[in-house]
Amino acid sequence: MTVVTRFAPSPTGFLHIGGARTALFNWLYAKHMGGKFLLRIEDTDRARSTEPAIAAILDGLSWLGLEWDGDVTYQFSRAARHAEVAKQMLAQGNAYLCYCSPQELDDMRAAQKAAGKPMRYDGRWRDRDPQDAPPGIKPVVRLKAPQTGQTVIKDAVQGEVTVDNSQLDDMILLRADGTPTYMLAVVVDDFDMGVTHVIRGDDHLNNAFRQLQIIKAMGWPEPVYAHIPLIHGADGAKLSKRHGALGVDAYRDMGFLPAALRNYLLRLGWGHGDDEIISTKQAIEWFDLPAVGRAASRFDTAKLTNLNAHYMRETPDEELAALVLPRLEEKLGAPVDGAGRERILRGLNGVKQRARTLVELADSLAFYARAGAPPISDDKARAVLTPDARAVMAKLAPALEPQANDWSEKPIEEAVRKFAEANGMKLGEVAQPLRVALTGSTASPGIFEVLAVLGPAESKARLLAAAG
Image (tube, rainbow, N blue to C red):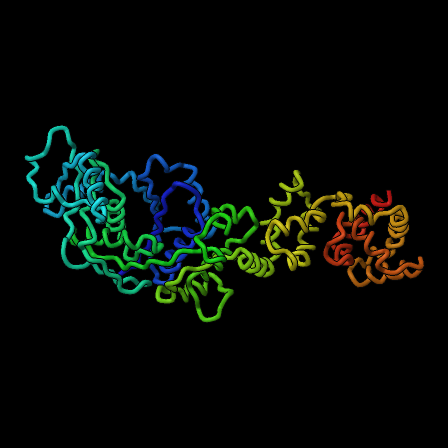
C-alpha cells in the first residue's frame, strides 16, 4: 500500500502556524513512508473563500519547502461528484429525504432545549414515505446513521476513541439547493484521492465519527486517523495573535528562515529523544505518528528566534547574502552595487554570529552595503564625533595609508594602536569615534574587522567624510 496523506485548508484567511504544522506532519509522514503528499483546497464556503487566501496558502507552503505531489484539488469544483455519492446512498437505503421546514426544525430545537435535551435532529422523516411531503418544501438528503452501538476510531495519536451512536443524529449530506455539506465532501474527496492517513488537528476528532459513518455506509476502506493536539501560547492559553498566531508570511517578513520554522514546528508536539536541532533529512528519517504527543504544545516566539539564530549561523554566507540582499535594498531604497555586495559577503560571517533574524542581519549589514559615509544613527553616536574627535579622524586617515598593502585585521589593529600612542591617546579614544565614522553607530562588529572588510579606499573616504 502506498501511503497518501493530504493537507486540506479552507481558504478563508492566511496559512496560520497550526495549519503549517499540520501540513508539515503530513508531508513528513508521506516522505518517511515513501508515499504521496496531496493538497486540497476546501473552498466550498464561497462567501468566505478568497483568491488571495488561496494564493497565500500556496505561497506559504512553497516557502516552507512543503511541495505537494500532483495538482491541487479544489473541493468546490467537485460538487457534482459529491452529490452523486449522496444520491447513491439514497438509492442504497443509507440515506433518506427529509422534508422538515425551517420553522419545524426551529420548533424541534426549542422543545429539546426547553426539556434540557441535546439539540439534534430527531429522525422524524427517517422512515416516512416521501409521498407524505408537504407542498413547497424542498428536501434535504440525510444520512441514515446507526442508532445503536458505537462508532470506534483507533486513532494513531489519541488511541482508541469511542462514541455512542445515540449521540449522533442523521446529518445532512445534501442541502435543499442540492449543494453538498462539508462532511460529505471531505469523505468523498479523501476516497477519490486515495488518502490512506488523515492527519489533522484534534478539533476535527468529533467530525471523524460522523465521517466514518459515511465511509462505512459506502463500504469504503477506513483511513488511519491521527488527530494531533492544538498549539497553545507560552502561557497555556489558546493560541492567538498576541502569542504569535500569525500567518506564515508574517514569519517570513520578520526574517525567519524556512528551515528554522520547519524545525521549530516539528518539535511542537513531536520529539526524538533530547534532539532539538533536527535537519530535514533527519526529520524525514525519524518522523512517525506514535512519537506525536497527546498534550497541547506551547508556541514560544523566543525559542523560535533562538533556533533561527542557530540556523543563520549555519547557513553558508553566499546563501545568506542572497536572502538578505533584497531586504537591504528595500531598507536603503536603492540597489546595492557590486562593491557593496562584495563587502556584504566579506563581512557577513562576523555579523551573522550576533543576528537572530534576517531583519537584524539587514540592519547590521546596512553600513557595509552602502557606499560612502553612513548616516549617523542616533544622538549617542553623534555625540561621539566631537570637533576633537573629527580632528583625530582627519589625522588617522593618512596615517593608515602605509598599511594599504597589508590591509588585514592584525596589521590594521597594530597601526591604529601605534597612532593612538603617538598622539598620547588611549586606544578607546580612537576606536569609538572610528567606529561611528565607519558604521554610523556606537555598536558594530569588531572595529578592526570592519576596517578590513571596508578596505583601504572606502575606509579612508569615510574617515575624511567624518572629519568634515
